[in-house]
Image (cartoon, rainbow, N blue to C red; front, side, top):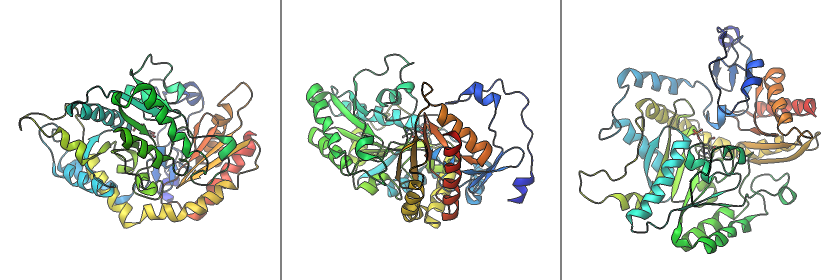
Length: 446
Ligand SMILES: Cc1ncc(COP(=O)(O)O)c(C=O)c1O
């Protein structure tokens, strides 16, 4: 990419006005990490320095950056139809993309409701769950069950069922009637597991306790990430999701998989539901649907849930919910092009076949100073570093900063946990490069 390496971009001279999301703003503005261009596996800084993308953007650029077919589809679409009203009207590509997404989903999940982000998709799924029970005459089913350490975006619904304390504690009482399953993670029992840990399936049985406490007749749905990503890559214990499904079936609870991260190849399948052979009632997706190029999310819904709404007078709206930009034409065009690219290049299969190599490479970091645990599944890895005394998160922050400045690598950090999730086009050579860089960073911050 000689053009990108040599090109330079104007650097903004005023960093004041922009309030960055989920960012240490003062530290950023003191030492900004600016990205101006990208291609394939790399970003380029405004000065033209190539930086390896170890995190597929924010777990979303599954096909790699600025892929020509997606870029072309977006620009063609912008010239053809910029926007059509999403309520009471539609454009052809919305139907085409919904059919394509439904075809990738397991079982009877065959209707797709589009949103603009994962957070909106989470709130949409929770609302559909509540309304579904309501229209069936079981309106007392209003409780929602999430899980400790779960991340379901930042809407009030999502932070209520989510289980990450800093995302919740500043924002008041949140939704009423929410309970949480315990996290599936136990370092003593699971440390340095490749893939799904052997220990922990029984933690699903805690749902029985929650049902006994509240009664099934008050519970609408259970929502989990099949693999908890944002909290630091926690693969599900073997058999855990199957057990959760069985208990939900026993009590008539809907099971919602939040596949915002795990969807579109991250775990070697279209959806993690397929990897684990468990059919949820709804799948939430976002990120990889457009390979991160245009904001889009959505919910894939079981036929029987959708059909329960299809009653009353034909001119009547069945679900009072939606967004101005649901199924935006640019997002649909990007989504269709991304799905074509995933298929043409076999990227889901590629992720599956690279998984053992990836896991072995990640585990080479075991034994480096301060490395407490490493977890891998699909093309993801979480690396827990020991926190500095009285400064939780500082070592992780320094690792992220050093990776970018000294090693030209983007890593994701939550607290003192590093997460790696490269684009699915990553080569074995680049996997080696990623972990060599991470090893140097870990030594440097030890
Ligand atoms: C599992 C999960 N759900 C929901 C979201 C929220 O998506 P968004 O940031 O697009 O709102 C994320 C984002 O990382 C996620 O990982």
